[in-house]
Length: 374
Image (tube, rainbow, N blue to C red):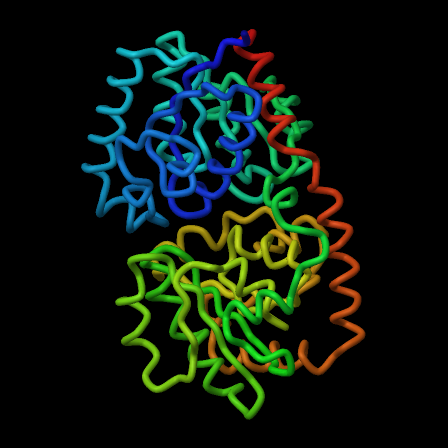
């Protein structure tokens, strides 16, 4: 009988929990007796993960949030490292959250624990100096995008392209009618999904602009829906101020399947929107100090994942000062009125989906099995 390894894992916030949950599902298919412990969320727990701390503890963004929470984060990392070193797993998998995971991975690696980092940090987009931290931290990196392994190999870092698990999980042809029925939306409605992000800071800085755009675009036959991360409804409701927006708990995939267009915060959700073949306007705002520190560090002209992968502005990006209700509404109306442009986006998103659909769980488990000799 094949030995089932024991894993340590850390995933931060909702996007990391989603990726880790899909990875765990594949690993459990290979090793049914798999054990996994560490920091995670509900998607991981559904795959038998034992949570020592909730993933919400790592749900912060930018320098300001990090400084405000630094003492607690360092204490958690130290305690987690102590616990893992005392009960050595065969491998530790850090899922995204590089600022937390790299230091932990480096310590665990020095203690003789094999380390894998899942999701190559965007060293090709900004902060290329991180490559040395990756080299110190990870025995192997599982890469979501096809151009990443070559960059890491040049630095002497083991890496495997595994594709994106969302490309496996999301169907190529999305059942729009079923999604609309599940959300009580009429087939003839024009549905616009508002996805402001999963962090409290994103709700604070991005949600008001999306809600303002919805107010400007409101007309008969249009419906606006906003998936809300569990626990954040109380942050959203005071911002509505009379806007006719249907809040739904979670169900971001149902919202994307049902919609005709989405206004979406930059991040994993933009890739999800592309995999659902939905036209989008990408939005992002942050604390002014975070923006000031990050604005000149970008190596690419794009921030949205669909645009980065296409290496062109497939869809609009409205960032910081440009992220206003007026600009969002204008770009969204232009997309809704341009059927040929929508058809062209659909074709490009199909190509992107095929590129990223690589049976990620199998590729990742093969790489991990080779690393630990299982």
